[in-house]
Length: 226
Length: 251
Image 1: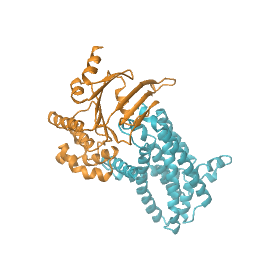
Image 2: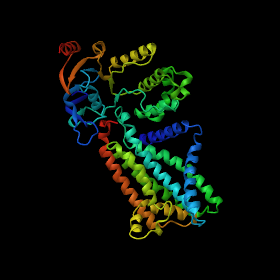
Image 3: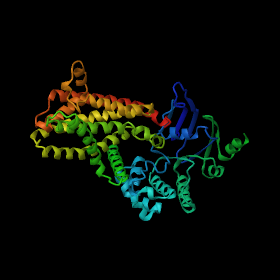
Image 4: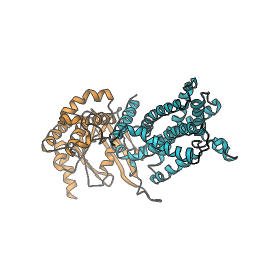
């Protein structure tokens, strides 16, 4: 039994907000297994349904058909940066709010504030309102908070590090280290090198269906042959 | 427990951010309702005034409680709609957003209410022992405001066009809620219809307590309380059933 299994999952969105508009199926029919400790790469062209699939796995979207089966209750996190950030609040308040929205208790976040402040390299700006930050600083804070969560399954939609060159390397390295340390991950990426480097297995999604799944090399080769 | 913690911190964050957005900050929590009351006082108290000295406390109490209800609903109506992008990123209890709006407006009401008390005392109304019944009045209106906010919040994401209707509907509701004039003066059948509105009973109870130190009309307050609790229950069921659909909506 895998850690998590998708059985013939389908999900439809409503169309444009107009009277009489019809929905469309972003995910048609997907069956996938996710095993404990592995990193599953998802590839496919824009609009193939990869991001929707991640949100189904995260429990954010409930499938309209099929089902998601878990071996045990799982804490699943879609890596989201700056969740719930409010421009007029200090970095500290935003870190608490964002951490709580990500599922941590207030005490839990407060105990990690020092770590967040240090990791984000914000220094005294940590006590300043967010609207005095550069966009890179906002991302650094967002990433530092998101990294405090310890999920059973981590879902990554293209974000593999943020900020200026230096922080990009640090955040990317830490995220990669986490993925290699036996955490169960699903990774969506358009970058072949990233997929090759991090995925134990790759699934190729097209028009809401799995076209092929297997090891990274052969799946990528088949994907590019089309 | 975790939910309440998050609810409080969201409300706190909202209040803090709001006060940071203007030069006068917290002062606006009192100044804005004071301006609103002043407009009504001038129009209904002075220009169209009845000469009744009791009219001013009557009006101020009505407006204070109405403003609380109204701000919860009009603020809560946007609560889910504005947070759809966040609902796509993380799984959150949907009740959080409208209830955080209600909580932050309730904190603001608490300040305005204190000012109202001071005004009433200087005019010679109270304090009385009847204040002991105030928590029941607060509870009834809080339930009704939460229920109305939940319904508005549940529907607006599906039909954002309703935003244009809600403000005017609230204004219409105000005139049949016994805020500006007492519904006792209305002719039948309007009077009977208006009496069905739970806000009427709640505001009447508040006036009884604050102006006369009398116990509220228990049967009327009980009716309003039960009605409000029922609507709140229905609204919660509605919003929980709709919850899976919000992350799929385009904002």
